[in-house]
Image (cartoon, rainbow, N blue to C red; front, top):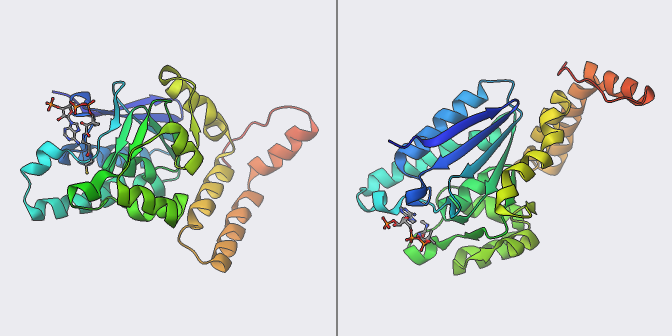
Length: 260
Ligand code: COA
């Protein structure tokens, strides 16, 4: 039986691969539960600095909800599923490490919503994106309406949510839906790893403080956000890594960060 989601560790980087290529890596109930389980495991491990979420195969990152499973679900099971998206995927935007979707193929519906839950996104050149839910008589239900509006703005979000149209990776880049596009599908994972090297190897306290401060901008009023940033700065100011960085600069060498 397929493992549904594979977890691979490369030092401080965790690679989480949706592994149901025969179903376009669609999100079944069990897949979402497994993602939650992996999230709990990674969140408890302070060595993890970056988590990359990707899909097995060359066609799909994730085609959204498992529509075959959905057909057999009662309305109350669907309601439970909506709760599970929220509780089991939250770690992607609340844990101490950075999450990044490496979108290797179609990211549709819940698949795009999964990518939107991550902090960052990189895509393969032929990846496609869309929120087709309104065409299916529903709306994005895994936080998609809220996250996409905050990420790319209300007007651009409405275009994608109301028309359900599919866009390619270059339009996704123009809209700011993805941060970058890899040169080829084969290079997607390596490009993500290279891009995030400064995060995986940077000063841990500074990285965590920066991550939490920028994330806070989404939910806090501006003045409160400035207070949050100040408190986050204080944690860095008190750290030995900050002193080490200044010393390394004066000694013209690379700093050796210890997360203290
Ligand atoms: N849930 C369950 N199975 C899915 C799926 C989904 N969301 N999307 C695709 N599959 C399955 C197909 O049923 C097919 O399996 P089958 O041959 O046993 O029927 C297999 O994956 C391959 O899909 P297929 O449509 O033949 O491949 P394609 O390359 O022509 O198209 C997609 C791929 C993803 C574009 C197309 O399958 C699609 O539009 N899927 C629905 C996506 C969607 O609307 N998601 C949002 C849900 S809210």
